[in-house]
Image 1 (cartoon, one colour):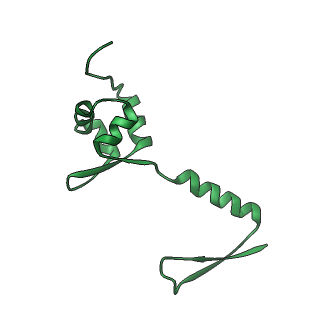
Image 2 (cartoon, rainbow, N blue to C red):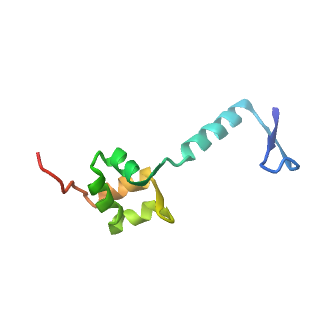
Image 3 (spheres, one colour):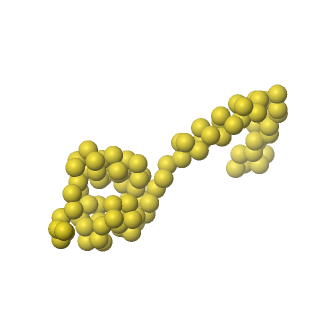
Length: 99
């Protein structure tokens, strides 16, 4: 068994954990899977959905998008996975020029 010493943001606190190398790898890989991918603002919507800024503005004000969005003043950040699932569920289609 390997003994690890983990530091928190408060350096006076230490947490000792004993685990095998396999347990440590499983822990690290699990933490990487749980990371949320976020994008910021209208540019993030444009990047994710490959659309214009005007359509991104339209989408950011739709009711279905609000569950993925966190607003701080005039800025907002949204969870990519939640936004993508909601868009598929609501069958979002572009409203701009048609090909």
